[in-house]
Image (tube, rainbow, N blue to C red; front, side):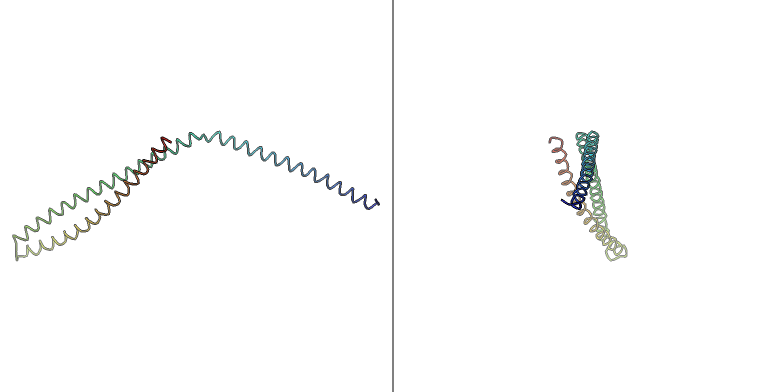
Length: 157
């Protein structure tokens, strides 16, 4: 081995020595990072009790169920108000038909016919809203039943 070869060998040995130190430093940093992550997970797990999380989820489901039940009650009440309104319109319609029969050929008959036509138009609109409300009520009721089943399954599971 010549003089140059010795210098190259020394340079390689010095580089390997430096890489060894760097490698060990990286290894120590990696270990420290893993230790910190493990401790952070342990602390987080201590604060996140699974039972508390489940209790919170169950409580939230109960709140949602209560909200849906309230919505069903509101829609049912609105539908019943529409039914009362339709009944009142039908009574008014029958009353106008009596007036039309009694006041044939007079201006009172023409006025009663106009009012009757307006009531029939309004009755059609109310009936359409009633039908839509009934459909919404059925959908909400089905959603309420599904949610109640999920809550029961969650409680028993």
